[in-house]
Length: 368
Length: 255
Image (cartoon, rainbow over all chains, first blue to last red; front, side):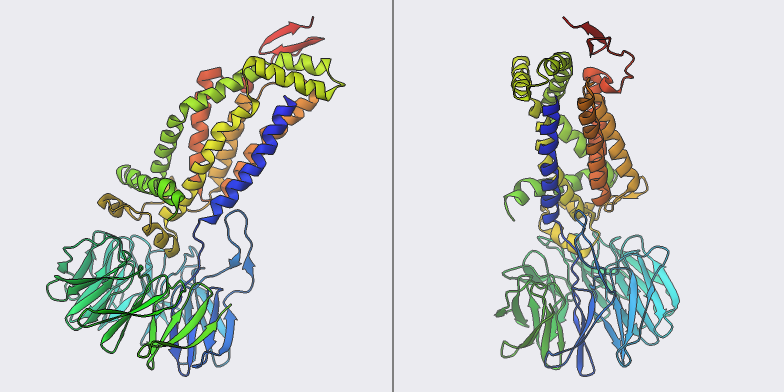
């Protein structure tokens, strides 16, 4: 019997550790995919190491400031890495940089004197923030996984108001006129009064919304996780149209409006072009991979990148052209300033500056 | 997508989402029902294991005799023990087979829970690759991670303790009553080590997996009860008489 017990014990221990190892390998650890924002002559982004990185216009690293010093250990499947992750693109207001992080805090840094402070959006229940802060007037608007959208005074960071949805909010709010629009995982799009936070209307879709959409001609265009694309009247919250075609997978990124069509990238490796007025499907553009990062409008072209790094442009005749095969995983939104496209890559973490017209990489700065 | 994703992870993810849709949107209930289905599918194997354990318990008397007889010759003892196992048709390692088979299920379940619970955009983005084109799957997402006040995406101390406790009960029911002190010590180590390890895993992993272990342990306890009663959980009322060993409740006089 002793032999049996001994055998059992020594067989079990390696097997259980094997379970620990294999069980962990295929999990999806947090990474962060902040976009790049221009501030004066500099570019600012949140790195996958939980730092706020400042680059010069030639790609030189000017400053790296960790939001939180130290790293987490890794017991079991808890991966070792930074203690905070940055998913949202920082917001800049003069020398002030506002960064939202996965620890439920909003960090504010003054680039001029490097003084910084941070606050929990809800200290009693800190939940990760996966969206970007939006500055509008004297306030800053930010959403959280606690299901709330907060309006804070951008100077004192004191709460002005908050509105609570029924589930997590991962989408960055969109501000238009005197209203704020935000999508939630509770399947609703909410329109709130910018000053009071009062609900103006809510629209319930068939699935969750991970983006807040794009507004053109008093219509909000947004894709949902139910694989349908919606056009909603921003004044009444009424449905203008819903796509008749069901997509292969869900809509994950923002859409772009160009002329009379709204272009909606989807995780099914396609870009759907709907007529803005009728919702009729004009065409479907098939790409070599799925698009998980929000595209940009550059002059009269839509520029987008697939998750595996293939950069495309789509013109107003719905013709697509592959510009570059970058070879990196890209989940961060694309950003375009002063005729240069900036991309934050999630493999070999880099910032790329690309001249879209010539299809050349101007510079590539590693962040690791 | 590799073969693991296509053959195991994908089906498990989609089935769990569909279950949670029909079970009032509760991810916790989906895990419990899936556990019961998996354990029921493995019932023939489990019954074999339980009967094997029972036979091992029944062999205790003879084992004690062998240990006494060959106390000074460990090699001979091992050979005789193996002979005894063979004659009784028992494979001591065979008891571990159901656990071995369950291991890929644990791994798949853990990976499924992480993806379905969608605590971060990364896990949701990853989940999208596994979803079948069934409307119901898309309607069911995101699932409700809250179950009896616990968020199944995160570890739960309470569930971890329950996993450890139920595993101890299950182990205690199947552990044969050992006679000599060294055997008893080994049994005690085994009896404590496994529940401790699983308690540790439960604290480390998301509590959805702990819920699977707890439901699975309760299933085993109930099954074990119907096969061999309370087993080792019964208070040992009889002490071995001088020169005798306990075989169940019967004291057998040595020849």
